[in-house]
Length: 129
Image (tube, rainbow, N blue to C red; front, side, top):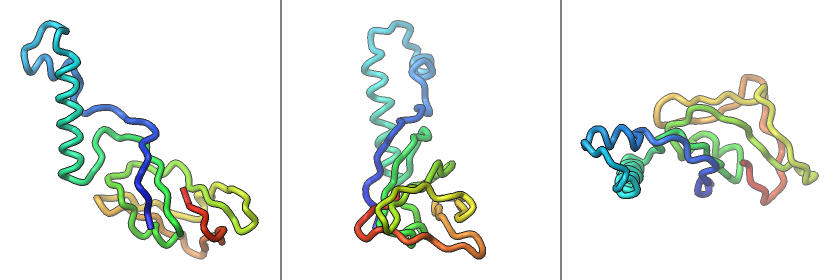
């Protein structure tokens, strides 16, 4: 089971305020707050409608088990920074990239085991980040 994503870094907006002002032919900064608010609202609407993130934010995702990695609920994904889990003794570890492969193509990203590897045992009730 996946839990709601946390945005740790908002990323960059695909349309800059200066570009929007140039398109709108606005020369003053009197309405910058209003225009930026409209850009942010448009991006939020597009994200909600399409079910994707725009502007390449950095996210933190949590799930209950490695089996959840068969389908990651966020897309598109550019990279996986780390996978952190709690072992059966209660110690926190970062999973080695030698164990998994990130398949990030398209809108159905997944993380799979590399050949001959196995997921480590995790502490009951802990979450994988």
